[in-house]
Image (cartoon, rainbow, N blue to C red):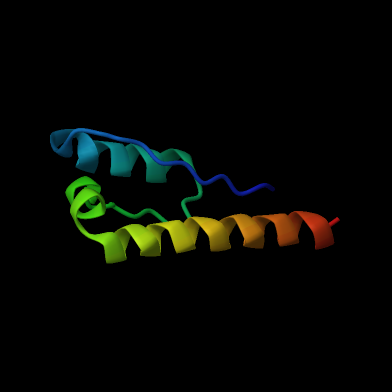
Amino acid sequence: MPTVNATFKIDEFQLTEFDSWFRNHYDVVDLKILPNTEQLYLSDPIFKKLVHNVRTCTKLRDEYINKVNI
């Protein structure tokens, strides 16, 4: 069975209902509530570099997995 990773934007007042519905309908492996980091990204060069490095590493990891996991 494949694993799917998705990111949704949802109103805070709907979060509890969504979480409950999602867990009742799917085999949830991981569910994270992500903080809004837009201002941090715009104002902090260190954070911006960290985000860039994470994206680069994630891309490299995914490419490696696709290459060797035939």
